[in-house]
Image 1 (cartoon, rainbow, N blue to C red):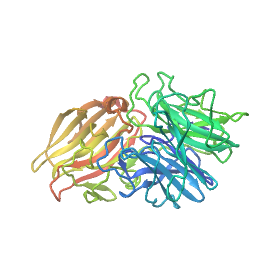
Image 2: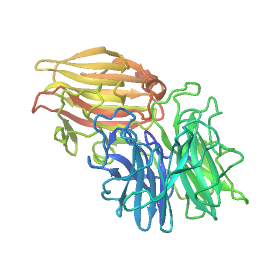
Image 3: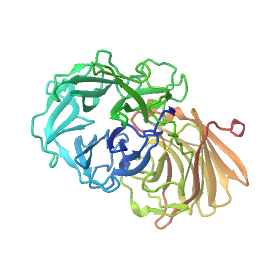
Image 4: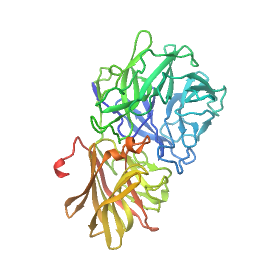
Length: 505
């Protein structure tokens, strides 16, 4: 069969995967968004359905006033003796911790702290021994992967932390994962930074504590030399074996907005690349060590059809799974119904690293048409294309009593500007955003006519401009509403297309 990458689209970075019986489970990082660490389920490696989150309570993770791209970093998801474990870092508090559950569809435990520094922690279980690994530095500043043994019940360290491998010399050594395969212990890491130089490298040993011998042809997977190729930043992966004995690598990457336009705004996404072991036990990945936008493979049955959801509405999404908040929401400001959403705005705006009244969906593809009907009494409410508190675009209705207007506002670092306004004769409006790889176009419908307010470039919401590790979120928001007043959102629809009708733009 032929499958297409990314396997999971939009801002779902740092994938980690495990298998229980015939079912696969996958977790990704979430940074300042809440709930934290989504869990996906698959039975065929190709099609993934989100089923839960690991961090659903304010007692589990500190997100209050966390800066964008702070908070919850890369998770590792593992299963041991009928229990799931998710270990991660809160980079803001500089703490590594894990949570556990016996029910992957239910609630997870309170956090258990592990007193080892670094980020991107990993758990490796062998019989009654639990190894904990993270990247970090020793007292002399030497960078490497550090390992200790812990009590999996309490998180207490049972051995001192010691460096077991320093990688191949690439910058930002991170995301260690350990596996035992045919009596060899493999240590897979990422190097080069989660940018255009990203790569996956590995080493192996006869002992989980080393010494480790590096693969002679590292990096085992990277797209760093593929100029003019859309898929970039390939790295930070996790190995998994399927039910037929085949090996795969789930890893992150991103799609730049054009062949020679080195910007990306959809975030880092989940990719799948085949892995092959040779007779000596070394493995290779992908097509000559690169990942492709599509792979032809006989490893997957032709009966498997890769599904793709193209339309998202209030009716066909789950408020608790598909949508996300900025940090901890003030829940009294949100009212959910089957066909509409009511938001009470506060004096907190999208420009602050706090928790404005905001509910968002990850933007999953370049071409999209986003429509919604918005009604207010006073204040402001609408659609935001949100990268972080310094980089976001709004199409919104604002005003009070007999004066209402639709605005297009652009926020790029220190430049905040209302580009265009259209006066309204009532307190409600139908608004629309048309998305393309390089531009967003903003419309309001007045008397049956779509009026273009303006156009803004996507690159100013990209990681290359904004910095950070997240991606654009399509948010519905409200702000500056007097007590008791709420904005009403209805007829929301986000439809992903293969292209946009340029004649209507």
